[in-house]
Every structure is written in C-alpha cells, then in structure tokens.
Amino acid sequence: MVYRYNLYNLEALFREYLLSGIIKGRSFHKNTIKNYLSDLRHFLGWYNHSIKNTHDFFSLSPSHIDSYKDYLITNNLPIRTINRRLSTLRKFCFFCTEAKILQIDPSKGIGNISQEKTQKAKTPHLTSLINHFQHDLTSEGLSNDLINDYICDVKKFFSETTHYG
Image (cartoon, rainbow, N blue to C red; front, side):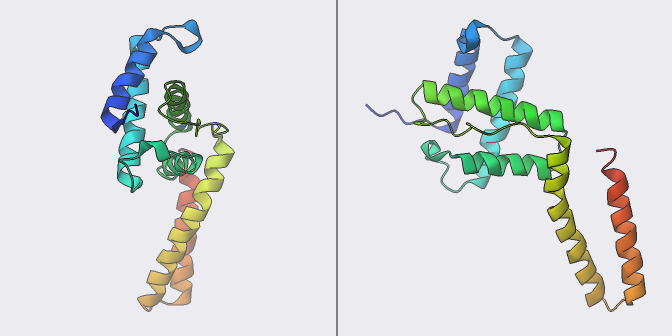
C-alpha cells in the first residue's frame, strides 16, 4: 500500500518522532520541539509557495534545499537562525527517509553556513540592485557625476550596514 502524505500531516508525524526520543536515544525539551516544528512550518510554507508541484512531496531534492538555503541568506536572516533551520531540515529529512516517506535523504551534504558564505551570496544580489538603481537614475536623465555620487553613497551605506547585520 502506498501512503500519500500532505504537508500538514507530515508535521504531526515529525512531532511524534521528536517526542518519541528515537534520535540518538534522547528526548528533546518541549521548547526545542516547538522550535523544530516552527522551523519545519517555515520550510513547508516556503516549499508550498515556491515549488510548483507541492502535491508531490516525494520530489523534494537537494536543489530544493539549496534554493531554500539561498532564500534564507538573501532575506538577511541571522546566521544562527539559518543554521538552526537547516539543522531542523536535516532532522526532518532523516525522519522522512527512516519513515519511508522519501526514498533518499535530500539534505545529505547540505551544511551550515558561515559569515563568509553569506557575504558572497549577498554580493551578486546587491550588485544587481545597485546596477538596476544606476539604470533607473540614467533613464531619469541625471548627470553622470550625480549618478556616481548616488551610487557611491549607496555602496557606502551597504558596506557599513553589513558590519552590523
């Protein structure tokens, strides 16, 4: 018999799994379980919104998880939050393979991130935004000197804010 799962009953099954203490023979504190479930809901919400074929959870792949990781990075979440969500996702994928919901664990090889990785990931996005802004200023007919001043100011602003975020 083939069981079909929807994204909502997967959360309940994962909760039972966490409560059972099967993972390394240990039980989790109620706040830890609450946080795991919150992180899982966040991922499932992203998956439901971002992936077209949400009715087939069996198609979850490493590329989906990489896309989710990129989504977390580009939304400027703190590194600890991103890594916690990735840890939750690894536990969830492990659970899904153990329960035969997924054939393979798509989170294998998906590691945590570092400050350096987030800076590299944000740079192309930021460069694209600045280029778009520069194009808009040019289309407004502003002088090159004024455009350069604006672009300098924007780059300075972003370089200073990345030290705090």
